[in-house]
Figure 1 (tube, rainbow, N blue to C red):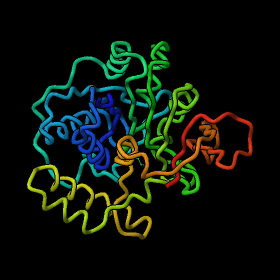
Figure 2 (figure 1 turned 90 degrees about the vertical axis):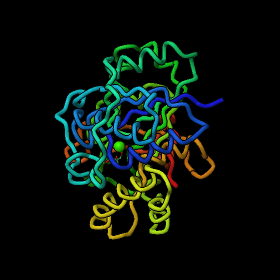
Figure 3 (figure 1 turned 180 degrees about the vertical axis):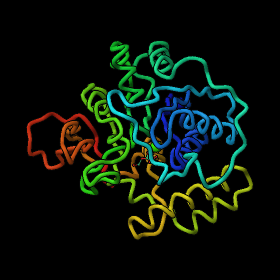
Figure 4 (figure 1 turned 90 degrees about the horizontal axis):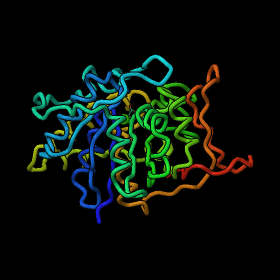
Length: 294
Ligand code: BDR
Ligand code: CA
């Protein structure tokens, strides 16, 4: 039976590839897509999510708009990575499917209450604001979540937005702290893993040659995304951050990690948003996450 998932996202070219991968995977049943402010403001991420769903021909997947800012901080965006629209690289038509009227946080709550406990997996691939808001508003849903598989954080690879922090956690560390303390089983796909999941020229060319609309879009998006990372890291290839979360769900044997304790720094002057990962078990803090390293 297909695994039920909710994708919580801030598209984002790599979010887009993750959504397309999920929609194309018979192993997964996408219950809904919930947009959050992150790479670009919410007014763009929800439109982008609808464009992606429509590109894939899955107009039946409902798209919800969620929180337009972090729990307590001002929103930090990343147009310098993703472009003005968040989905720069190819122009897609304005979506025709409507945005759902229900708030994304309420959808997450309702869906978890409606489905049998332990059957819905949450896939946050943006800041964790919507997930933390849902847990705060409806604590009864926490124990109903099968697992959270998230893209976020970094440890050995260090940060991409500050020397210490990865973007998704940095934008809303207070939300991340709540989620990591929730007791839900968590799989973390940090930069340590996603910086190894790089596109190659052959892969991009093969995508562009696919006889459908999604392949060429993926090629254009990852080409756009690569331009930024090549300048920053000096290596070729676009990191497929968010698709790693979907890939772990479908093919966990491709990855290696360890159950460890991960705490979120919310106060540090230079380290806010850092995922303090006790990789070597030097504290007696209990494990709260499967931290993927490769
Ligand atoms: C994460 O931040 C965003 O820019 C990407 O979409 C990804 O979710 C990588 O740090
Ligand atoms: Ca993202």
